[in-house]
Image (cartoon, rainbow, N blue to C red; front, side):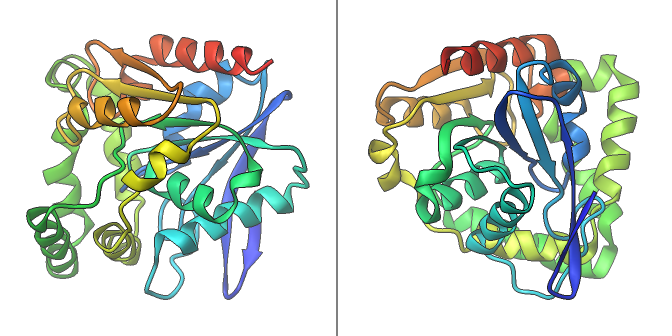
Length: 264
């Protein structure tokens, strides 16, 4: 489905019935990463999955992007669907940054929060320099250069060597990202605000899920969030890297199912 917005459109899917659950993907990915969750959790959740600007089937739009702008896009789709009750928002990696931006702007829309493979802190100076390098490289060498360099880091070494079908699917998902999408979100991530001061203010149910073998965001970042978010729950999934929802689907889905059921 598509929501017309400004000069373009946002693509999204909706399946299931139950607690409203919004999935926000990471970079450079799309809503396709949530397929296993959408099929397994549709009995207990009304699932909304979105392609962010320049990713998947969503229009690239004009630059610049910001985390606030991506959060506004998500809110527009939720409103378009006529969802009036509070929503559980699940963000993976960059999707977690969008989730924090949504909470700052629209705290009343949240019933719960699922932070997957993400962090609250801003980029280090080195990290910011890497974002700038990514922008330059994608302009000069294309999206394939970004995909080839990043894909091996998104999953655990075991997954990389033993699940060629998953690797192939993931590569195809990443190749659907536009150059403008990579540039826009790289700028938005580089310039995003620090969400660490927000953590003690998250007085709502929060589940943090992280892969034990994450090569993009160290497990330590998840532990720091868990320490600072009151009443949060941290689940570490063995044998999983950054895309634990695709690598260890059963364990990840069970963690989400238990969390959703705990919300009554």
